[in-house]
Length: 113
Image (cartoon, rainbow, N blue to C red):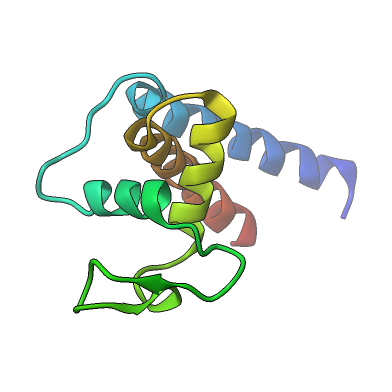
């Protein structure tokens, strides 16, 4: 690939990232969680779940199941890490994770195409 082929693609990807970040800019700073979503559950997993690196038991779902079977482990783990890093509530950290995925998914699809 020549430089002329890479430059327009990367600039289009940057514009796509900026547009998505502009659309979801409130997710980074203001609580906007919906009541009919999994946001509260994922925030609770991030706050109460301590079994990220070793097998653990989650007693609050299906009368107790292994923690690895409760949800996709990346979202609660990233939520817990961002809540500790930014010193915000777990719900705000979950919105931050959601915004990251919202912005990254179209850009990665564009770059793979």
